[in-house]
Image 1 (spheres, rainbow, N blue to C red):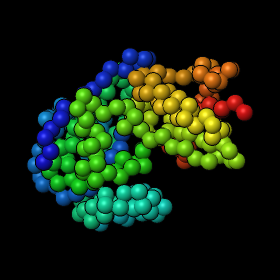
Image 2: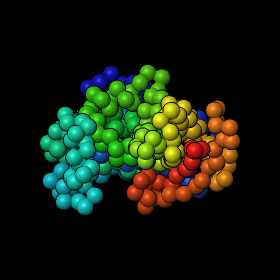
Image 3: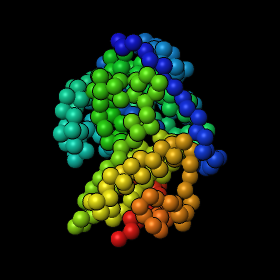
Length: 254
């Protein structure tokens, strides 16, 4: 069992009330006893209203159409995190933590949920899958990512990807903004020479959104080194395979 570290909640100073929804989903693999989850030492009073935990025999979950450790997705996890994959595959039980909440002005809901996940690792959890950021952690890696004194930085909760988008051009995009009830970010047509600048911008915009900011369709933003700035385009949707979320897209000037 690890020494508990209190997980803080932070205020979202740019937050404005909206009808956007926060989505949380995690799979915890292991062998669990029938004991109370020791989450209070992590600053959590338990799962927030709207988030539920269900218990499954792993053998039964393997038959589920959306089982995350099979097919192309499973091969990716096996390649990226072989030890965590082995622990997850060998686990006899899986606890699924998921729910949808109204958009709110602080992240107490995230603190409480992460505290429960940390507690589950203390009573038999061996691996945690966060499908929203396409990452499978063993227990030690999860603790290093989220049990950070003073709180894990916002960047730790997200995935920022860079894909080729044609000769000399790249696509920078995020996954995981649904944890904050915000669209994911997409920067198209970024030249190689601007990758560092665009990556830093993507992270900055993601952090602004996590703190409650929202972008309007057609909104212009100033960017150092981009004379005319960038213009936001709203799109995507929960059925969009690239994000499983709405998105805010920007086209880098050619």
